[in-house]
Image (tube, rainbow, N blue to C red; front, top):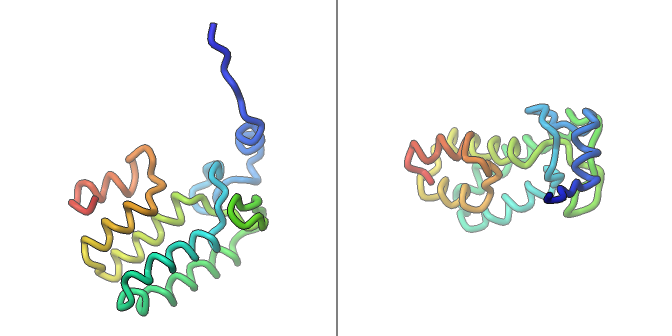
Length: 135
């Protein structure tokens, strides 16, 4: 009989509804804060200076909105601050929508998805991107 291992972290997250994503209400199982994810997106945008000019202010506004909406937050596995309130899936889906809304080139969208893909089951925005030929 195979023994199944349970990580205490997963047990804590799924049993406490205070640690659910503020957007989708699912448990935050990859607690990377929106500030750290945002810095990653900004670094990626350095590859596309023209797009960065248009997107950066909207990215900053999005991060401010998350900061203002969050009440209970987990410690971020990257910076250690208690700022993880939005799951990486919802964050990356929001940025993907922002990029699409700004009519960013398909190749750039595909590049974004190859780096910031948190749709691991390919059932959400990645499935849509595959259907649209973006990924």
